[in-house]
Image (cartoon, rainbow, N blue to C red; front, side):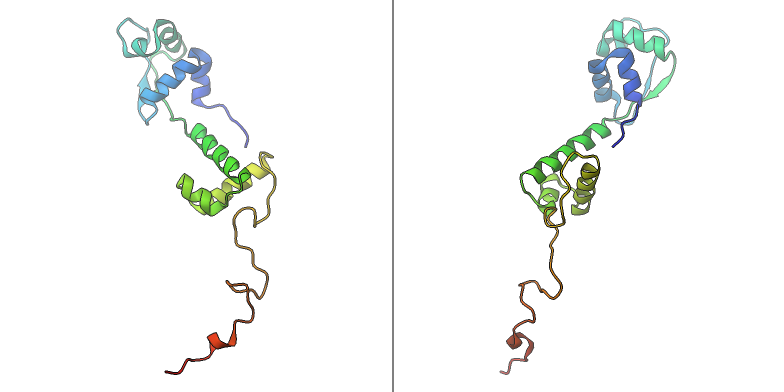
Length: 155
């Protein structure tokens, strides 16, 4: 889980964290943000960010269009944190998948990523909620099945 700099990191370094969050709220839906050459009173950026932050943004990217991403990495981190907390509380992957509205396979993938990163303890299949059966066991845990179930019943 290596962190990398993003467009939002660069913007935040110039205008600050809170102003960057406000940009994401307004333009982080896939919209491009046009940054004017000069920040003037009344411009949308000035109204959103305030004059000092808008000026710094205009000085850093004058006349450019910025693709402002949504906070997908943050959303992914929140989901991973939820998986870790549910696992610590003893929930299985199927239960977690239902609660988070993601597939059980995705929960298993997230759990493995967290294990590799050292954020949760390595767990065996039983801890992950995967059914573990030894060879020869059927769903009821009996092998061979009772003979009465194999015989055709007469009317």
